Length: 99
Image (cartoon, rainbow, N blue to C red):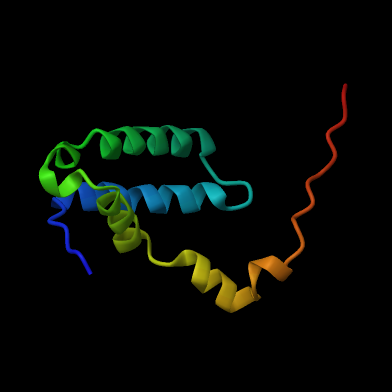
């Protein structure tokens, strides 16, 4: 497997991005507006980090590896707990009524 020399601040920002994203994914998240703003700020910080201008950061595999390294395999963990996604019914959304 290819190793990338990720800077510590980039790794911390990506880890925080995953944490904020998970917090927003909860039903009725507290302080949703602040969380969304934080997610946008972190997204910009990660996207424009100077590491991506280095030869090690040029490859798309570096971005994938950073997300894998910092976020864990949440899809597999969820599938192991609740069964395969393909067999799960789609969530039902509440009907929206016009006023």
